[in-house]
Structures are given as C-alpha cells and as structure tokens.
Image 1 (cartoon, one colour):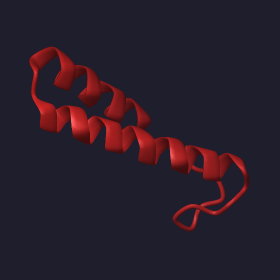
Image 2 (tube, helix red, strand yellow; image 1 turned 135 degrees about the horizontal axis):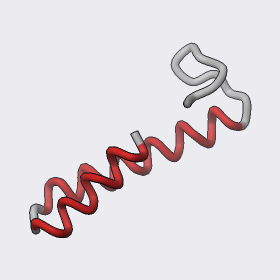
Image 3 (cartoon, rainbow, N blue to C red; image 1 turned 120 degrees about the vertical axis):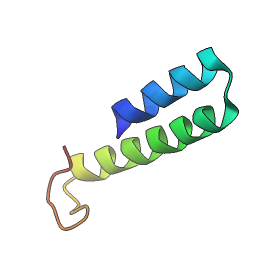
Length: 51
C-alpha cells in the first residue's frame, strides 16, 4: 500500500492529475499507519504483523 501510494503520488505530480495526487497521499498515510501498528505488535485486520 505504501508503494502504491508513492507511485500514484509521483504520477499525479508528473501528469498533473490532482485526484491521483490526493489518492496517493491517502494510501501512503494509511500504509504508514498500518505499518506502525503492525510493528508495535497490534493485530491489524486479524493479523499479528502487517507486511
């Protein structure tokens, strides 16, 4: 999810499509939040680790 967010963010900036830029930021933030929760040991979506 983090990689997809970065890719959409870059495509949105290069092509100039603001919706891709916005979706990229949202996916990046959600991916980072899930990664942090998973690394702290909290179960995310029924899984102990979020990879």
